[in-house]
Image (cartoon, rainbow, N blue to C red; front, side, top):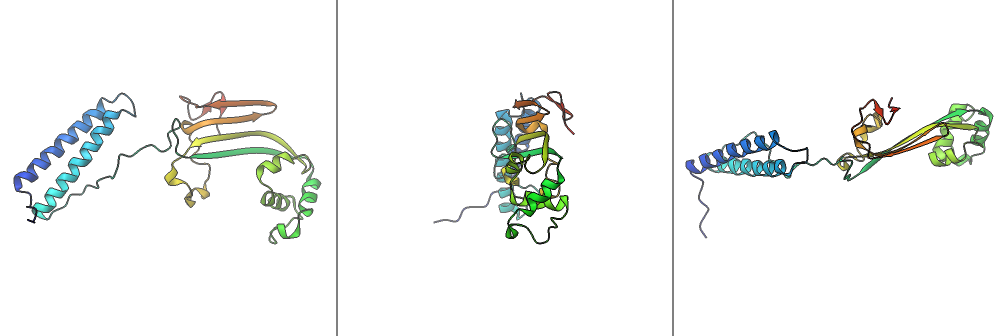
Length: 216
């Protein structure tokens, strides 16, 4: 079986011209796209990537030279598309007024000794709250708020489209709610006083206000 022949100078020049044409075609598709998901842009992107890879291979085989281009394995997609999410993040805020501090302290003291972190000081309201939230999940705290001496206030729950590649990455723990982009909202539930509000697929709203509800 004969060895494949190295590309000639003319082959490299042809590959370079093909890449130039692909770049022009991609730019033209971007300039005239109908919307952000225009399939013509995707097609042009893939053609440009293929042309760049062909030129890179020909250049290396003929001249043992490389290009500074990194050839993507696939067309990048918006994994955080609220219309077709591949993952979601649920952000919840609930406000409570502490009406009976004694109930908070008593509820913490009633917890099983082995359930309380020994470093938590349940002789204070703050320590008692830490112990209660460590043992009970937020829904149980909410359902038992009266016996715990808490008065529920306003609350908000946001369901946002998320990038699955970013799930589980620890860097967001430093500032867990910084990526609450209103444009990624799939639906949200707000409890303001005795009024309940539910919105789905919030679109075309500014980042400062959604359906009349100010975003802080």
